Length: 137
Image (cartoon, rainbow, N blue to C red; front, side, top):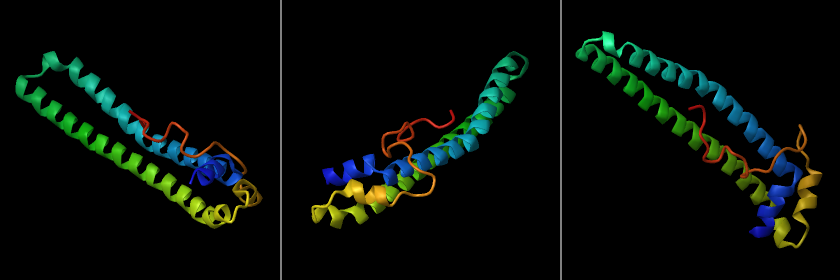
């Protein structure tokens, strides 16, 4: 499997997958960032008015903020799982196509590079900051 992994990482098709994953990750960040900023701002605002609220009001607003934060964290985790699944699906598809080529002893990199996708080369899949990274918080 090492020959396939190396071929994916160094091929034009593999680099294209990496570039596309970067684009998808940027979309996820753009989706999550405004919500993360809003939660941070609301948390600061709640702390700023803490002295002016009675205990019950503060506790109610803090509980609401904590619920929103928990839901946001679940959304972040879901988006991370989706990114990882998307990347793995693309890598698995390339590996599936390469397996018979590698087994036949042909240079997998040459075959992948001959099938350059639209958009050209990018970074290597599986080696970016998006795998396991923090998105928007």
